Length: 318
Image 1 (tube, helix red, strand yellow):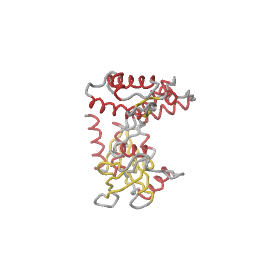
Image 2 (cartoon, helix red, strand yellow; image 1 turned 135 degrees about the vertical axis):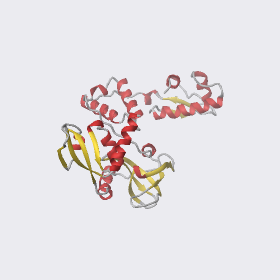
Image 3 (cartoon, helix red, strand yellow; image 1 turned 180 degrees about the vertical axis):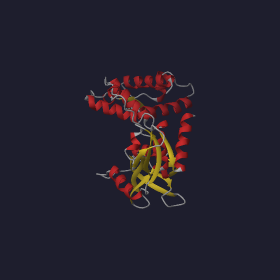
Image 4 (tube, rainbow, N blue to C red; image 1 turned 60 degrees about the vertical axis):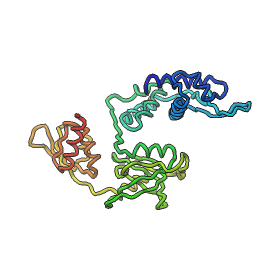
């Protein structure tokens, strides 16, 4: 966010917090610096600012003042704006800081940073309380993650093209999403399939093209007692293809995240290295995972996995 925009939003919040009545758009334009002279341009910018404040959790209210005014106005209730004292135990603050670090390079990085900022404003520095040396990462490379996560958050139905296993062409699916879940490094969305009239699970990597929002916010209801994680776990047992075996050369003492899944390990002819066989079923996710170990791992077989890892390493180098 630019400095100019930050200053404008801060001035808008202060103005609406200090007002004892609803302020019209014209009054806000005159009172808050940073808005353009053109009224049409002001309206467009003001609409974006209102949306941004609401996304930040600021309770922006719309209403009419007593006295017969025709134009609606805006204000921020101090009672709704102020938060109660936040009291966290050290281990609770550490968990929150760790969760923010998980999302730092993913779709929810902005939300994670915003949460930490609010905790710091309350006198709690959650990030400094995390355990040193722990650098978790939760990746969201699928393009469908962002819009599906927003649809779950806002309770909005969606539609998308989905290429199911064993099919040569995608099908259009109409879904009321209940939750987005990560399992074994893959992302899934769970919800009510309108066309089939039942609960379904979809892997995000098989969603093709753009996800379309097809209904208003609040129009999706999650059934009481729904456990989306259990739904994905049960579905994954039947959907997962039989694993293949990849052959890796791993530096001695390294890549324990791969070694713990190994079905075979033996010393390599080259000193300082081991030959390790590891099962895998998804080339895309496995290539990302193996590439994260850098120079400590070399893929020997299969060729397509080796090329996928090399491609990701070259991309990181570029």
